[in-house]
Image (tube, rainbow, N blue to C red; front, side):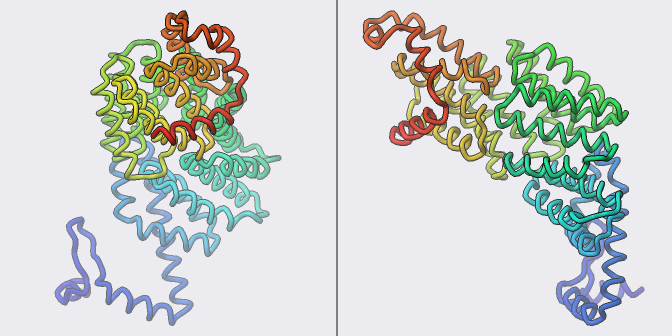
Length: 472
C-alpha cells in the first residue's frame, strides 16, 4: 500500500523491467536522514551488501554456463547497487561476502570489457586483506590478486601484472592451494608470452596444466589448456596446439561456457588459417563472432573480426579483408583498452593497403601499429609490423632494405610463427629481384640477411618509427 501511494505521488516509479525506482529528491532525502543515524546506516548498508553478495553468488554458476547472457543482463541491471555493495564489503572487511561475490563480478567485468573497473575493484579489495593473518583471508587475498592480475593483462600492463603475480606466489607459499597456484603460474606464462619469451612461457603453461589436472577442476583446466594452446600456436606447433584447443573446447562445451567456447573456436580458426585451410578457418571465426555478438562481448568480437580479416588477406581478398579489419577497429574504438588486438588489426590494415598499392596509407597504419607495440611492450607485435614493413618496402622497390628487415624477423626468437612465415615467404619472393645489378652493388643476399640478423630490434624500431613518421 505504501509503495502504491508513493507511485501515485510520483515519488517512486515502476519501470519497464518491473522494478521500483526512487525519485532522486526522495533518494537524497533518505540518504541524509540515514546518515544522521550511524547505527541505522551501518545496519542498512550491511543488509544491502549481504543481499547483493547472495545475489552475485546465485549467478556464479549461470554466468559460466549456457545461461551466461541472462546472468549478464541480471547483473547489468543491478550494477550500480552491486558496485556500492562491493565497496561497503571492502570497507567492512567482510571476507565472506567478498568471497561470494568475486567470481560472478569478475566474469561480468571481463565479458563487458570493463577492465579498468576490474583492476580498481580487485586492487582495492586485495589491499584490504594484504595484512591478513587468518588462513581463509590469506587465501581470499591471493584470489583477489589473481583477478587483479588478469585485468592488468587485459589492459596490456604486463610489467605491473607480473609484479602482482609474484606477490600472489608469495601469498600462496606454504599452502596446498593447487588451483590458485595453477592460475597464477598460467597468468605468469601469459605475461611472458606477450612479452615475447615463448620458450619460458611454454614451461609456465605446461606446469599450470599439470598442476590443474591434479585438482579435478575442469574449468581451471580449460583456462590452463587455452593458455598453453596460445603459446604453442605462437611457436608454430600446430598439431599440438590443435590437440590442446580441442581438449579445451570439449571441456568448455560440457560446462556450457559460451564465451569460452567462442574463444576456443577462434583459436582453432587461427590454426586452420596458418595451415591454409581457409574455408574451415572462416567457419570457426564466424561461429565465434556470432557467440561474442550475442553476449555483447566487444573484445571477443573485435578479435574474431580481426581474424576474419587475416583469413581474407591470406586468400588475396583485399577488399573483404579491409572491411573486416576496419569493422574490428571500429568495435575496438569503443573501448580504448584493447591495445594488443588493435595493434594487430592496424598491422594487417597496413598489409592490405600495401598489397593494394596504397603506400601512404600503409605507412600510416604500420606506424600506428608499431607505436602501439612499443606502448604495451609487445615484442611479437613489433616483429609482425616489421615483417609487414618489409613487404611494403619490397612493393616500393626497396628490396635490399626489405631483406635486412625480414631476415631480422625470421631469425628473432620472439617472432611468432605467423610473422616468421610471413618473412620467409617474402624473402622467397624477393630473391629473384636480388639478381639485379642495383642490388649487386649493395652486396649479396647472404650478406644482407647477415646484416639483418645482427641488428638490435630496439634500434631498428626506433629508426623505423622515425622513417615512417616522416614519410607518413
